[in-house]
Length: 305
Length: 299
Image (cartoon, rainbow over all chains, first blue to last red):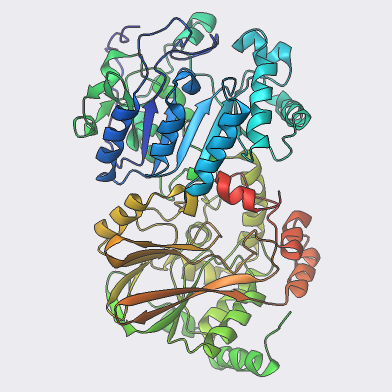
């Protein structure tokens, strides 16, 4: 994917990195065991534009992160667990701070789940899992995430719950607002079926780039962030104000814009502290929804706007 | 379950009654933000009153028995419980120095919600019920008082410079949970804010961590509702400086929880709130909990 052409009318705001609170690792690159038709980085079994991160690279970046006072670490892909070093990577991160792994849970075996529970038990920090599930029935989910993915993901959730975790189920809202309660009830019921009685569910908005752009046509011309829109806006809600992402190519502004060439800010965290222009239309989704990427425990919304 | 003695109750109430109605605006609150107060050796610190005037009254008595030199509240006076206006006279009677919490900021500035920082819709649903009740039942006099509370206090305890705030020194409604705050992050906060110890609240669950170079972070917890630990009491924090050591003690605080539950029901507050008071387990605003803290609870 190339950069969007410069828009000659709108003035896009430049956003400073205020704090480096959250450090993301694109641990599986763009490689995935699934090929979801709404994936904003078009991850798939064949997409090797971004590759795996090694334990060695992650160790180096963890050391670098200490000086910045990074608060939490996130791991994502593609599918995080197709990186075969995931368990030692998680073990390494949990020495430094809390870790959250984004996954579809399919590759997680029961033994792996138990081993990760032990790692968390030995640490003072939380090990969180964010499991993607985009429907409460096979028909609803598999239409987006591929055949048989519903049952396979639910079995992964069952294994995590059996090991003592309470995974955060993330679901992209593809239904109208008036059906929200019915859909939530459906999720809660489906999760109970695999023994998950204290389900935690986080709704996500559609990000209309990558595969989703091809599916739905992407953003309209008016959906962009302009300088005028930043007046009285709480910029702390935008991930680019408090986060950076490490890929096998360097340090990027955020996980969502990975595929855009200009998201790569440099090789080191020092290089990547520069400001970033919110010129991509996906920035509009962050602007409108805020706190898309962080866990609910991080909170959002400043007192003053 | 212990309850405060009637003598102590009278002492606290008499002190309030002896004040003229307007004395609070002249002598209360203390406004010492930004400079260190005279050194103490032993202080009591608590957060999150959430309208629980019964627990506050018990705290004033208990901390007095413990030989406390000063008492500090780290904010969020309202929310969750009944009769917000019953809290302020007690704070005044106990000479409690108060830091502004997000709740106090919102009520004081007549904002539309508590700015608790929740992102989950169900957390926000209950937060809104609680906020609307508190806003409607807080008198203008105390709203104005809360508006002008300091966002931080600096206190010397022995040789230690303490920074007292609500969420964190950089953001009033920041959640600093034990399991999601890296040690180097807490060190950075201490370093950047020139503090040997940071005392905060906001999450409702107490914890502390000794940091390198004899620095400390302490979440003093909340006296407004139980700490999601199945106990009916709440917790406050006693901090003592002993030569080169800062001692942090979390003290259980029994209070007449049945009386609180009764008042909550009389005020038609949500039964889910009352259940927490009667069981010690959180039933609302739980999506904000990190995994480890959530698993320690029942729901």
